[in-house]
Amino acid sequence: MASSAFLLYPPPGHLNPASLSLTSPAIRSLCHGLSISNGCAMRRTQLLSPRVVSKTSPSPVSERHLTLLEYVAKGGADVGDDLAVLLTHLQYACKRIAALVASPFNVDDGRIPEDSGGGEGIGSLSSSGRDKPKPLDIISYESAISGIVGVARCDENLGFANTEVDVLHNDMILASLRNSGKVAVMASEEDDIPVWISDHGPFVVVVDPLDGSRNIDASIPTGTIFGIYNRLAELDHLPVEEKAQLNSLQSGNRLVAAGYVLYSSATILCISVGSGTHAFTLDHSTGEFVLTHPSIQVPPRGQIYSVNDARYFDWPDGLRQYIDTVRQGKGQFPKKYSARYICSLVADFHRTLVYGGVVMNPRDHLRLVYEANPLSFLIEHAGGRGSDGKTRILSFQPVELHQRLPLFLGSIDDMNELESYDSIQQKINPGYDV
Image (tube, rainbow, N blue to C red):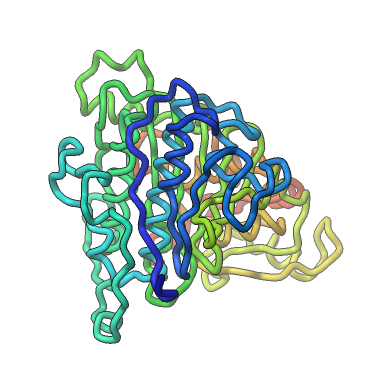
């Protein structure tokens, strides 16, 4: 096999979730098919039994890192068969996105057929010949300078410009959710209304398909953010558009699971199903997400704040006073804080989750449904806090799909100190572009 290529394998088909044991043929086949790398050569690994994961690493499950599939199916979370199937399809979509982000000019390789038998609109990924094992095309210099990634589309309804890559990744996730057979409705930052998928799907998925996509041209980390709710069966009698909207506007307190995928020097999927926050890293040798950061606990206090300092003079007095105090080492913690700001929410949040501190956007900019709720769910299950500067994020009842608000996330002691200041929400000049 040529070392310069990596392979895309077919997605999982519809599972009969009678048993999600690693010894069942369905799960063994699923493990066999879900193999992808986002930047280097890889080999396809067959999971022949729970104890044999590859020819070179025959160690039992208990002696190695659990894969995400093993974790949700048997290894540490009792999520139920339906959610396990959904997460399997969702991780597959994110592996495809990881491959495309690593080689963003191969947009045709990730294109979803308009009608390939997978339902209305977006077709089934597994029915496309494009998804058979094959190497990605080698990127030419001409394609690299063609500016595909920078093509923006302005959506006046959403109030921001989305790119060709945003739309493509949105379609890839939608196709995988259709394939899962477990999703009733998907609400996306890229769409002005939710997409009703199935009357029988037990779950609702809200997603920001590619947060920070404007940074791709500069090779800055990007990410996918998602939240999963139960479908509200009591709304089933309503018209499709109405029940799709109401199902998507659930309070963050009702989240069943939430997570993000960070596309950076490593591809990391961080997830909580309500019992801790856990991070899985994409292993390029097997194409599997493996558990590398179990039961993450954000430090009670960090020494980093993350915010766009260029807007200092637009901030209210309370926020300026807080920042001035902690970076001089005069706050409740007697060490000087450092500033770290990537302007990619998933990347800034991931660093905060690992090292502690606070990440914030003090103006009404970030979206409650697609960004604030999932990330607050994750930080809370890691021992931190998410708020709008005054009120716990997960207590809000959304009233609009694209509702925006200030967002502050971080270590519990840092958040308590920050919120002790009278005014930290920016109200002056809140509408400038990023």
